[in-house]
Image: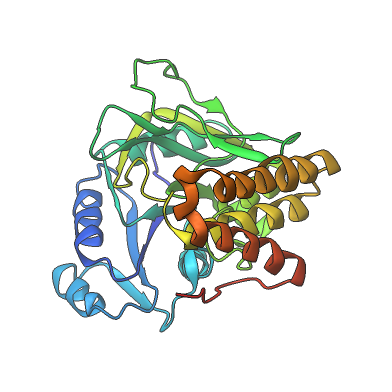
Length: 306
């Protein structure tokens, strides 16, 4: 490629000095000749903004002053990147580390077809570096359900080598073409956390762009296999935002029935009547508060009970 497109990587930090430092160090090894990195600090209280400035003086650091969530914080970075003329914006979780050639492979896949709006890498577990966390995502519109393709599968080359169509890519690492953002707008900040990148990919696809997973681009995500299951906060945002996703994308009535009755209701009943799940009272309460808040139009960040 004679002239490499300008890429701005946006790394969102919230009280994550150690992870963000490791992520930036891995990005510094990326073999891409036209990369700018910006850290968006989302209202950290651990002193990490000042320390990051000292350790990475060439990295731009923007401070929001408050926790705007994944959507709001990344939108700050997206605006910054577009104003500075980026051709692509890479949204990258701070709890990731990247292979040196991952960005080059993502850009090559995007540049091969101007209809490509979003590309994403193969994402592995950091503590199980050959096991896939995400090889793109799929949407089951009949059930209103999303899933990570390849979740928990050892990588045996089952995804091939060529870029492949997917319904969405994880917001953990997604390279987005400038024209796609200009056509559909930024992330929907009502979500705050979870489902925002899925809804964004749906908008981008419906605007005529392709969404691709690039098997040869690799990163590692520091996410535990079951780390989210116990968190009431996760259950709250996942249950509320799944309904917002269905509403925003115009999903059919079958998806609503399956989500509310076949999943939420059955899960809540199981957590109530099965002795081994009696300890899930907080999760059950969070799930139904998420449902109620959806129908009351309570979006963005919500403070849950203790």
